[in-house]
Length: 176
Length: 303
Image (cartoon, rainbow over all chains, first blue to last red; front, side, top):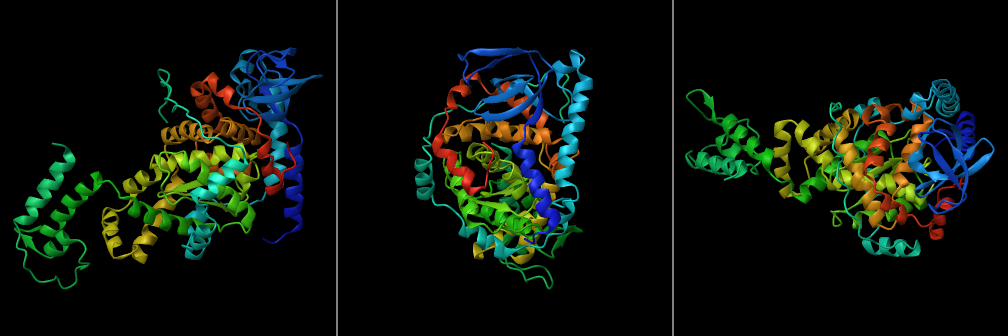
């Protein structure tokens, strides 16, 4: 890959964007916890529709900064900054804030990838088979034994987990 | 009696009624692999082309046939060649090996541990991931760069593994391939697909990536994927984290444009996962310092 100044600038912007906080809206009222644990002490209560900063994620938990308070809540308690307004935010009249959020995240993201051409429909339609790369791909393969050793080094232990059943679609929900 | 066995039975009795000793048609494709069409080709009775009739009967039969694993692998190889023709692998053996270690470990916990699994990072700055029939899984560099941890990478790979286990792409290819193409699989017995058949499968497979799978297939792969990751010892919220990251990028981000055209929105997928992921999953998320190995391999500075 050739390194051009725009590429370097784009990746610097990309990394700085990743390292800075990511905006989100709370979708329900929640208690911010001191630690990522259900029985941890609550440091603050945050109402639904509050704009927060996501500091980091850990398992089912996410660390937020809301006003002057920092603490942990569940991943599904927030909707990360995007175009649409969280349902709870809608009902509490937060569309103005959500809109601001949308603009903010849109600005950040467009600065990262504007002009970047990736793998798209056109490239897939025009592609000519590359057999050499299929051989290269096979050369990187891991054997089951190697994968076991890798798992052991990562302290990954297999466990029994039941499959998840599909939820019943709500009545009148669109099928597509 | 099932529909499938009726088809087989009627095709067999139909073939028996026909003269076996006959000349090779002058310009018909004589592969010697497809006995029915070779024997029948070029003959007609009462204006009805027997070759076409037998072909239709065989195609009907083909629609119900279970594709053996070696044929599925061969289709996957062809589609992979096409995909890698659009975007090659990144040149980074450390990361390629890492992705194969995580991927194979996950695949060993899946419903099809014995497939010849291959995993690859492809050179594209945009966000996407692809699976082919037979166990080839690809993630773009743009998506890997947005995975903040090994558990997040595992969430993405497990989703793709679930597509392979459920044969989503294989079924899509069968549905969209021209009738005769599936019959070309017979040539496998003499070793590998013909160049033409391989190119045709690549085309159908790549068209499938442009069309995208159904929402149902995607949500099913999400549900199965989080379970595969959890079974492999990863915390099950890796995929949820990645989907939140993509959701936060916004709909106008050009790195997401093609991905959003071919997948349900991250918000839709997150809402569906929230409904089905039980609270008990929160007990499967103990911090694992051994997975800090991810950051140096993928130049991650973010916690």
